[in-house]
Length: 504
Image (tube, rainbow, N blue to C red; front, side):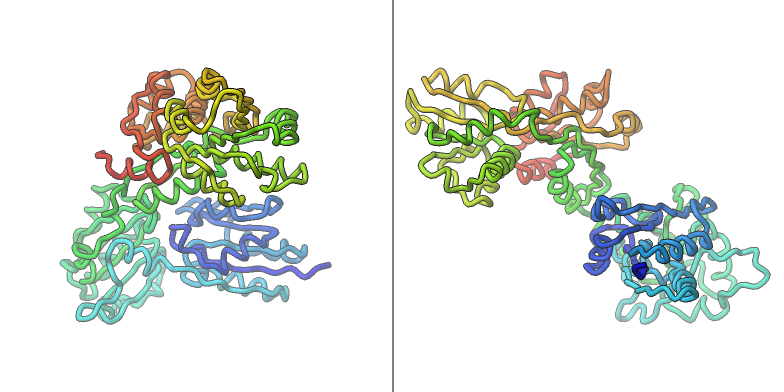
């Protein structure tokens, strides 16, 4: 049997982009991924389709699987010849119990590798604008478990030495024991007036920072209702937050945005929103699929020499058209002599990826704008091919036909309602968890309404709505939804710019 291998991998503090290149490589190679509560779910998207996922998350006083069982799980999977990745929040060796897991593997002569992660002890304060060391203020720092049972007969923390010997103290997982921690610090000489901060969900868009003092921390945390996971940091470096705070000053910090694009395309919009500090909830209202039949598209491709113009109305149309070209044994050379129009800069950019430069790129996705761009370039009797979605507006073909053009519209793909939990979205909208809904096409509007069910438009109107362009906005109006903002440039970049200028 093939020798198994275990990688004990640090996922970092919460922001999934802080994971290391090596960690991501091993995640992609894993036969089995064992992950916990603090590892961002988006990291799971990098695994192979056949990878076995095992959740062993541990919240305070609630264990999906106890540590001994986790150890045995790693052993069993490795002995079965599997490549196992144990994905842990933060760093495996900073209160991550990675040492215990490694020692258990050694008992069975199972090879392992440690992949360090960015520890929350330094990264979470950094995201709050608090350096753990700073010239002239702090030249030392200590990382302490905040999870030690205060009822133990004898503490393993040397409070008498720790309280005053180190400039900056960082307690991980310490919220529930905060009364004990602050009492011990004061008892052994730390001033009750020492600046302190509690940071919840650090490095994530949900991050919340409470600045307090050692003496006031318990009362302030109780009033603010702060719950785990959070860290507690003590020291004069906390005062630097007033000047160095950066993450929570981003324009969309604290805002939650519903991204309704198809899953394979949502990441670009999500990434741009996250750069601005927003929490993006990806709930793709649409799924892009092949049409029920490629007969019409294949026939058009086989007769390309009959067409004088080819109009692409979307990136998806480009992708599916070229896939079918390839299936037919053709490439971009087959388009020689055909003029090409690409609606929107993103569609034009995708054509360039296939070696095609569009002859015209009407920036306005309105039939009138496209026809105007074609005026003088097309004439009666010409034939135009439009590969597009199975269900789409007929305004453009009709306008062209009015000009005496022979237009053939063939389905290159179709959009269907995605298989996501519509009721969960209803709950999020009702509870005020979502601040903004984005629509990037008419189909995202109609399909989200199908997912939400009766009263969906009213729910959406309770929050702000951003549309990528006037066509999408028109669809909103037709369904009783009032857009808050419509992008001037009908691209993801334009949409994000419009959102950035919004007032919440």
